[in-house]
Image (cartoon, rainbow, N blue to C red; front, side, top):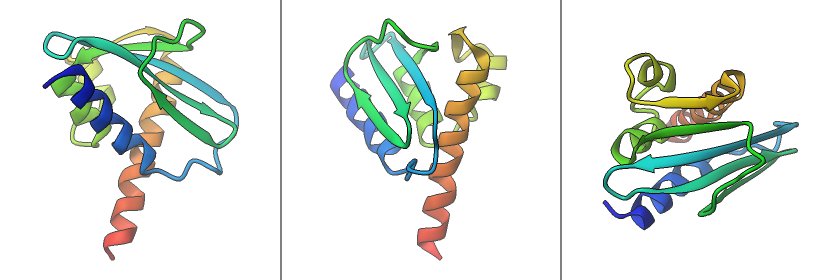
Length: 117
């Protein structure tokens, strides 16, 4: 996959979630390694979610993974904690903020299940 394909697929997954009820600030940079190498950021700020194809220097946490693994995480197919403990996901910075991103991913999966019912 190319960087653009990984970025667009990730953005589509994250933008599925209604985060309007989430307050506070979370800034995550995602570094894709290997095929499709590049960086983008995910920012949640007072109920608004942004996913943009730029590095974010004022981030809380940086996640480093292959494009294939990060897409699995974004789709909820691979738990971020499990990926971290098995070395498929590397985290630099605030681990608590990384866990907040996992909660957003879980919210996406819950919303999709409700729509299917």
